[in-house]
Image 1 (cartoon, rainbow, N blue to C red):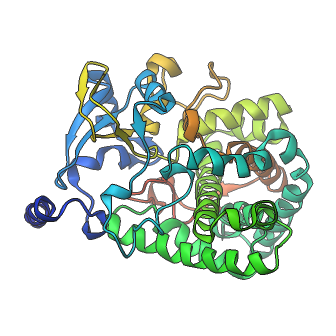
Image 2 (cartoon, rainbow, N blue to C red):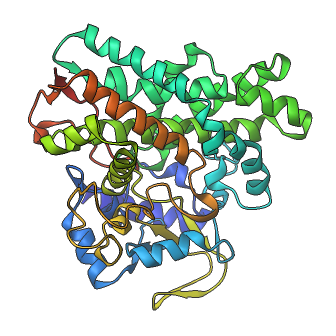
Length: 420
């Protein structure tokens, strides 16, 4: 009742002043469905909606007309369409403060030609061929973090010692960030995806991380480091502003950390459900491990909703009229559980599922996650190493008692106690 009353107040202010998401301190009930889960599974209502209508109109209290896409075919079409939609969200924020142009950046919220230019700067660093040279470094990081888990003694929190640390160590080393910044990024990573406090709270975390990165870029402009930030600064010089580079790095840190950390924790939990799956990740061939990782990515789809799109013109999407300016939200977890694509029993984890590829866990099209191959590498290295090092690994608490995130754009658990 209180939220409905607050929603009416916000809507009246929006009609007078225009949309400003920095003032939204709660997440509307009508937009929560794609963020709700029961354990690792999307709530049944999402599948019911997909079966009834793969594109559903949502009426949001902030005055925005929105359309939720849950069908795989429709989701893939929207994500691939660079002509009909814009990812620029600056019109939803005020002119100053958190959420201003200076605070909302990165590849996911930009359109060509800026998006094209920024992606070209970093994409070569994330190719499979380039990342192969990083494999020994990742293996060394994994070994060190598994040593720390062992030293902590059983039971211990896998998320704290391994899941959160491995991807942060990897991404910070790749970018050339100081170890002193790691703790701040770990702390802010979860906050920026938490929808319980609305856009205002999440944008506060975004702004704080952006300020840290602006300081990093300013320091490295004077003394370039050995990582990606330093190489971009040496190549581009003053042609790239501190703000654009900090926004680009912000997106890489966030995309390269939180999503992989959640996949490691939840992936471990899923594999521990069945001794055959644990044995497969421990003893399987490289091809079998690849297939298992792809199925984990599909099954978990920890990034629940793709970057928002806004229609550039009136159009029709699967029979649903979409007007110019309408928001189109793609449910990645809903699309990846679509039986029309995934096949029978899409809510089951099946490492030998066919098709093994083609999932949307990393998005699709122009805005597909630039770090997808890095995430795959970290999962392929970490999970087998974990299960080989600790062959008797087990959850230390019942799965249903884990501290699940209640409303987050990146699904996960706050901790994962394990015994070994």
